[in-house]
Amino acid sequence: MAKFLSIPTFVDSRGSLSVIEKMLPFEIKRVYYIYNVNDSDRGYHAHKKTIQALIMINGSCDVFVGKTKKSIKYKMDSPSKCLLLNPEDFHWMSNFSENSILLVLASEEFDKEDYIYEN
Image (cartoon, rainbow, N blue to C red; front, side, top):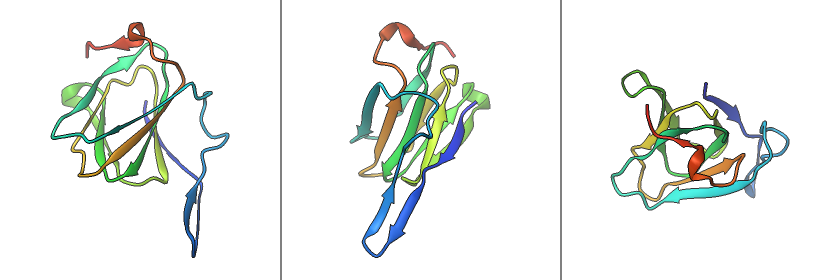
C-alpha cells in the first residue's frame, strides 16, 4: 500500500534544501516529471515490477490509490514529502494546480509490458 515518506529538509536564511539519500527502497533507474497538465488526469495503471516515489516539486495535485470507487486520496502539496507507490498500487493523478510539477523516481526503466491497466 502507498505511504508517505518525509524528505529531510534543511531550512536557513538562504532557503530550503531537501535531500533524497538512502531513504528509498530501490535504486533509481528512471526519472521523469509531469507538468503543463490541462484539466486532465494522468495514470490509471499499476505496475508488475516498478516502485515509484512521487514528489511535488511545485504546486499541488491529488494522487488516488486503489479501486476507482474505493480509493485513498493523497494530497501532494509539498516538496518535503514523498509518496511511495508499490507496483500493485493502481493509481492516478488529478486536480493539478497551475504551474505544478510532479517528479517521479522509478525503480525500473520504461517497459510497456510492466503496465497493468485493468483496475
